[in-house]
Amino acid sequence: MLRAEGLTKRFRARTGDVTAFEGVDLIATPDRPLVVTGASGAGKTTLLRILAGLEREDFGSVLLDGEPIAMRERLDLAAFAHHSAALWPHRRVRQQTRVNTKMNESNSDAVIDALDLRDLLDRRPQELSGGQQLRVAVARALLSERTVLLLDEPLAHLDEARRADLVDVIMSMQQRLGRIVVITSHDLAAFADRSIDRLELRTTAGAVGMR
Image (cartoon, rainbow, N blue to C red; front, side, top):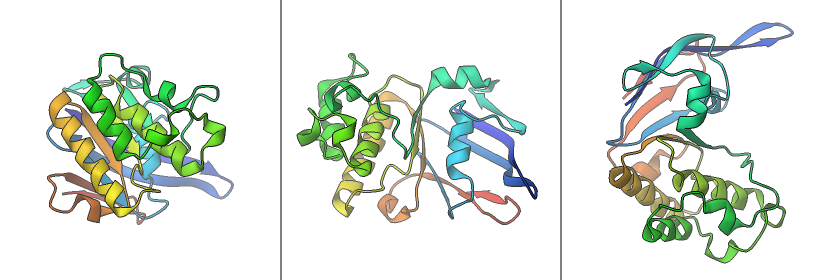
C-alpha cells in the first residue's frame, strides 16, 4: 500500500511563495487504481513527481507498506509516465517498450494494441507525434517491473474506444500483477462503472478530498 500523509508543496515566485497543494493525504492499493482529478494548476503532475522521487515535498511523508520511503528509494520503486514522454532518443518503439523480459507476451501485446502502437514499433521518437510519444511512455511504464506505476494523463490523445481499451488493460494488469497504480486524468467518464478510488485536488487553498 502506498500512502501519503500531509503532503505540501510550495514554489518560490517573484511575488512570494505559491502553494501547489497543502495537506494532501492519499492511499493507493493494488486492489484498484487511484485516479487523481482536478483543474489545471491544481498540482496533479507535481503530486506524481513527488511520489516518483523527482520532486521534494516541503512537508509530509510518503510511505510504502507503512514504512517511510525517501526520494532515492521512490526513484527505484516507481515507473513514471509523464506527458513530456522523455523517451530514449535513439531507440525504436519496440526497444522502448521491451523493458521487462519477464513480462508475459500476452500482456505486452495487450498494452501495445490498447495504445495503438503496433504500426509504430520500428519508429524512433523523432518520427512520432507528441501524442504517440506519450503513448509509448505509458506502455513502457505498464510493462516495467516497478512496484508503483504513476501515469500522468495516459488517456490524452486517445479516442473513446482506445481510452476504454487502455483502462481495461491497466486494471487487468493491476489485478494480475499486484501493482499500485496512480493516474491523473480529466476524463472520469472512461472510468464509469469501474472500481476506482478518487482523489480530487482543488486549487482553492490546496483543499483535497478522497472518495
